[in-house]
Length: 103
Image: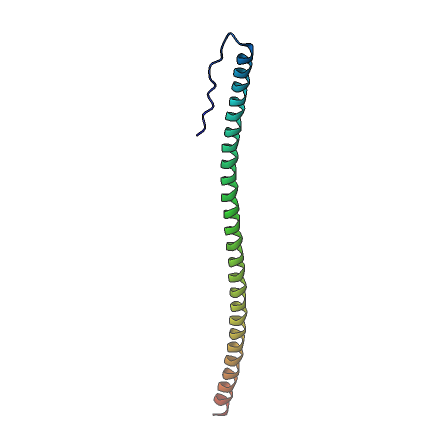
């Protein structure tokens, strides 16, 4: 990591004192920017995780919707089959009753 530690100024020189002060300010700004970058990188990680979760949930929702459609179709098919079986059973019952009546 780049360390910005100012060199001590020459106390006899006004220019050296000014440069030292500017260097201290720049170093402080640098630390603040580095801190902000770290926070933004952490926020970026959080947002990426949320996006990944949202995409996973979207895929899960799409999968559930497909399963629901398949089960709805299966239910419709089974109801139709049940209706046909009930109809066939009723026909057989009527045939049986006719045979019983004609015996």
